[in-house]
Amino acid sequence: PSRTFATASVRSIASTVEIVVMLGMLTFVAGIVLASFPRLSQRIQLQRSGQQAALTLRRAQNMAFAVRQVDTPSGRIIPPAYGLHFDRAAPGTYLLFADIKNQSGTNDGMYRAGEDVVIETISLNSGVQIGQMVSDLGGANQSQEVINVSFIVPEARMTITNAALAVGESAQIDLVGASGAIRTIVVRTSGQIRVQ
Image (cartoon, rainbow, N blue to C red; front, side, top):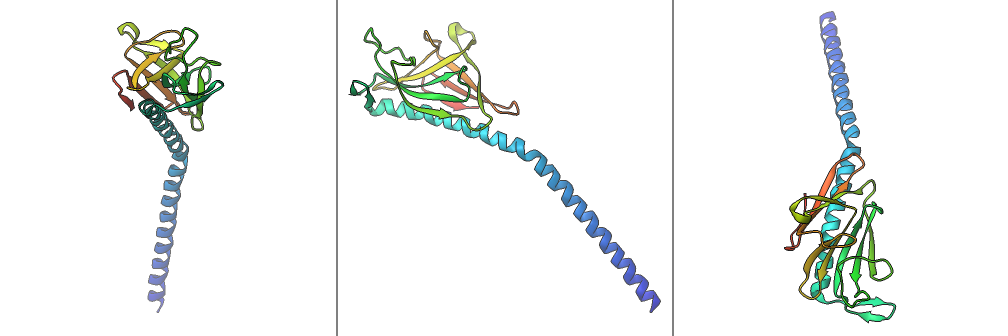
C-alpha cells in the first residue's frame, strides 16, 4: 500500500510539473505574440494605405475614361483631367481633384487651390504619413515636395508634375508607418501603378 501511495504521489508531482511547464511555455508564446502585435497592426495600416492610394489612382483614371462631370461654382462641367495631389506639407492626407482649365484656357495637370475642384480628401490610416517623394526628372531621381498624378480626359493619359512643371516619366511616393516601415507607390506615365 505505501508503495502504491508513493508511486501515485510521484505521478501527481510529475503531472503538476508538466502542467506548470506547459503553462510557462504558453505564457511565453502569448507574450511574444502580444509584443509583436503593435508592429503587425502598423504593417497592416501601412499596407492598407498603400492599397487605398493605388485604388484611388485607378479611380481617377476611370473617372477620366468615363468623362464624368463635376460641380463647380459656375455649374457642372467635364474637367480636362482628374488627378491625385500628394503634398509633404500635409503628410496625413492627399486629394482627389478635378483639374479645371486655368486662366490661359488650358489644364496643366497640377492641383491649384481655389482653381481646381477637390472631389475628396483622403486620410491615410492611423500612424501613416507621406514620406519622401522622388521623380525621374532629367533621368535622375530628384526629391519633390509635391507630386500631382493626373489623367487627361477622355483617353486617361497620365501626367506627373510637381507644383510647377512636369517631372518625368515616373514617380515614387513613400508612405511611412509609425515604426519606420515604408510602402512605395510607383507610377509611370505608361499607366503603370504598383505598390511595393
